[in-house]
Image 1: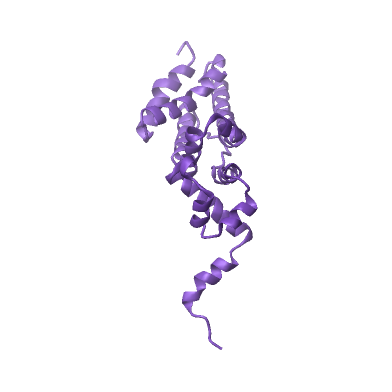
Image 2: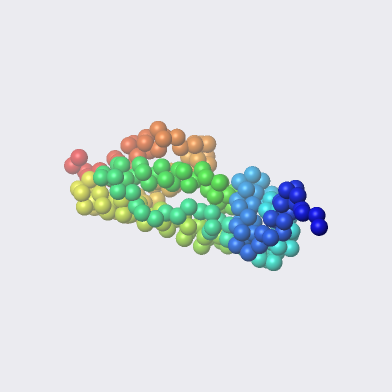
Length: 206
């Protein structure tokens, strides 16, 4: 009996790969495709090739490109858990914006932006829940907590806790990233906090 050599190991490993391990490889391949060729260039065949599996294995789990991308985004987007508490509203906002910047320029962040920018209106609606639950809601929740904590400390005027203020940071970061090519270096994040958010939040008597 001939013992299989080391060269046979990759084939045996690939043959055994199934279940959660295979699904993870497929979802990783989706993020890779979105980050490189974008939504319009992503194909089920390309994802299968990236995951080193057959196209049938992809279609068996996800009947459409939209279903596949939605699950990949859910799995890949970073979790926003604890709100920063650095002892002051400026420091809290800075920590939160740095975290948002890192997420925006991560591979899942690039993938999400390709979906938002390239999909038509009907397709974007398909991902609305994923975007809201994975990005918008947790970001707004943490911004609200930071501002409300600042109000309790006397650093923020009470009327600043409103939707327009909460929209300011995400809107600014998305606008300057898309329209101005801003990569949000640390200095740029600090300038946004010091020149926009701190004056916007500061009590009138300060």
